[in-house]
Length: 463
Image (cartoon, rainbow, N blue to C red; front, side, top):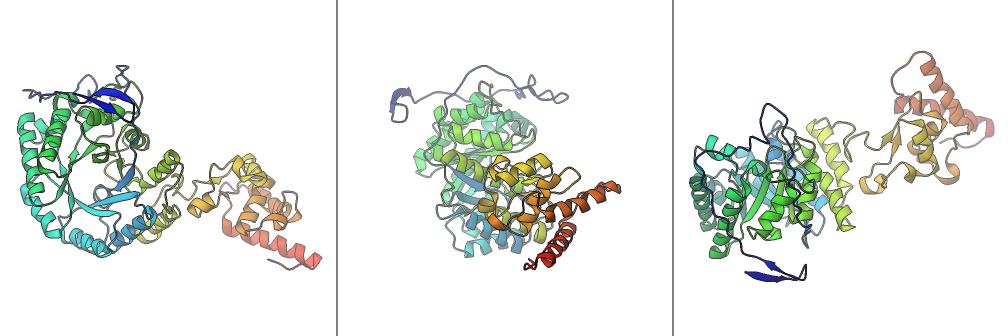
């Protein structure tokens, strides 16, 4: 069948036949995943087109996958973080959904508390195993959508479920039908898709789900889950590891609409963010993330990272309140007791802090020289310098001006007597053998003493 695409202005083939390959032995891609060696990245030099959807958004798994790697959140913590997600999301609801467990009373209490807020975004959804009895939990809670675990690689189908591919698809389809029958929208989590036989299982199953959607009139989402974090974003990479190939194949071969494709990636090979961005580029409307990237093993894609990716792709934050990211980070550290690595982008205490004197000199002349964005405006986090033996006069001047919020004619230059006197004290510390950085408290005390001394001699009013 041919279809004229309004996006490319070309006739395109739209109907493909990919029958299920019901193999007798599992296909484990041993040429790529030997297990006793580092996985290999194969190239076949086949390129698929970038196909960014008209709309893209973020979904959240903080209270599902994010709870699989740490002490469970309390009901109060979940509710407060959900409030912050809503505030961050903005009026357009860029953070569209948040998924929850339902298995414990505490989980369900948290769901009820969040539902009481009455927010349109993020929509509260759930996650269950592909088990008919689990639907009772969804039904009782009154949620409109649930995720369903549908493992897609032979590692899981043969070794975990002890089924054949045909048996797995029949089981999954029956569970999805049950979900639809009770009035809940299904979201099928294709677990371990980056180690699955794409044309032998993933596409045939996707086609079967789309046929079921046509039959019932109920939208069926597909979440492509890079469970082991082995997805690769490079052009020309072969399946099953190609992120672009997976998203293109779901859209082009399985005919899954953009708005029903979602990417869920892990960070085992440091690729969580770039893989999520690649999924957007090649046709997935949704990327699934967790706050601070907290999740099983190496974690998920950090939600705050995709807020900034969204803004870079779209040229606007679309109403998202990015300053809430700092509120979230502070809540994790002060109330939850989670220690954020200090160099973590956007949320770490040192993410926009410089120790190098030459960088501080640049910041003093023009902040944009060594700062890529206005972190004070966007994150309520002004750029800072840490004073060490290499900071120099410029670093100390920048620290004093930032700390005391001095601007324009009130700001100190690096040759000012107050700055030079503070620098003398810093030098004396390191001359005596100090190896640690100077603390803010120490610098404030020394700088204020120098300012008072200057003001007493000139009769000026002290800060």
